[in-house]
Amino acid sequence: MNLNKKDILSIYNYFKKSALKALNKGDNELSLKQVEICAQLAYQFNYFYKDQDLEEILALNSQKINSGLYYNQLKIKGRYALIDTNGSDNHGLTQQYIRALIAAEVEFAYIYEDTDLSRINIILKELKEYPKATVFTFDDEYSYVKKSQMILGFLSKYNPEKFLMHIMPWDVVAVVVCNQLKGVIRYNINATDHAFWLGSSSIEYNIEFRDYGYTVSLDKRGLNAEQLLLLPYYPVFNRIPFKGFPKTILDKSVKIFSGGSFYKIYGDNGLYFDIIKKLLIDNPNAVFLYAGSGKQTKMERFIIDNDLKDRVYLLGNRSDIYEVFKECDIYLSTYPISGGLMSQYAAVNGKPILSYTSPNLSLNYVEGLVCHESSLKITYENLEDFYSYGRKLCSSESFRASKGLELKNIVISPEIFNTELKYLLSHNRSKRILNYQNINYETVSNLYLEVENKFEPSAQKLIALRLKFNIIFFPKILINMAIIVFKKLLNV
Image (cartoon, rainbow, N blue to C red; front, side, top):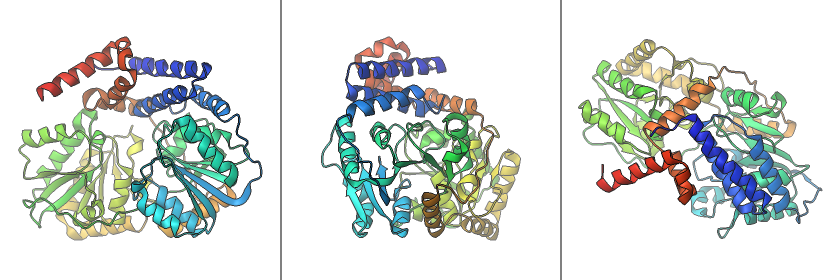
């Protein structure tokens, strides 16, 4: 049974009321967990981008949880702290910011919330080699309440002047801590600028990486222009030896590569699959490769139904992604949701990008992700123009090389990133100008609901797991979960 907006908001409000009820009863841990699931649902559907009720619930939890802790008001000038929810080597923006802080030769603490330190081996090695870095990690699993108290206890002794958050959109621990840091200048690194996240009421500044996030922050997060700073980012690679391609791919084939989580290519009536088919028909010398994670049943069915087993190849989740890009010729941006990091991988490897979006999905314009040092037209809104450009790329190796080189030369470099972050943190201003965009918010939220209903019911699985026996109060979720279990039993 398909969910609608009313269904989602009903479930959301159920958890929000539960969070407030738990707070009033003094059960801070439950309150934080219910806020967390509210944020996860809000992130999944993006009907709104800030909930002031949740912000206030977190602030009240912060006061109660840490009421016995005294935060030293003496701040050490030039000392920073960076909290990281779920960072891992060669993923996200952790290493870019750490390396920039090291390049600035400042004293800083790195706070890592996860207990799995094997995920940050490279990060820890770099921090260990820098004498002005202090690392705070957890040796065991703790409650959210205990974690926030331990972090705040550490910060009350470390006394940073500035506090940066590189966190997941639903990180209640970091926001609870942030609420207590009065007198500290607090920054959020807006890595998920297209979606809902917690903490916008707790910060002085929000570091955007493109105009899209700036617009959402102005329109929907209650932040003003003076709080919004712009700093694009560059990709960090994991240099793993190339694992190869399927042997049936001919060396002379033009390799059109695309990738990302499979949910990014579902929606808008399967247009992405029509695009793949048209590109292969137009360009008999081309093959299509896709690397990514998630539910790939629709792609497998597409290959079978169109007899494309010798032209479409699923590569799985590739750890050697940098080498994959080097071995391919063209990058096809995902649709209806584009992939930011993948577009950057293509650009820094000098690979031309084929990108289409409908005009009402402005989050897909890859220009904001790669055109940092100069403007360049990349994304097409007209399919015929898009296909024409695809034919030019597939027919000429020299044309591909020239277009790829244009991209490679305009992505922000690590050196420029380092310089601009130092300036940003010193002056609370950015060297770059932010521009307002027109965003069709309803189209975006409808797209996420379509994916949930037709392809990947990830939000409903999360809801069912948290509701347990209370799922009976939401019959649509109950029926949908029963259908999933039944199909799994029948191996359908």
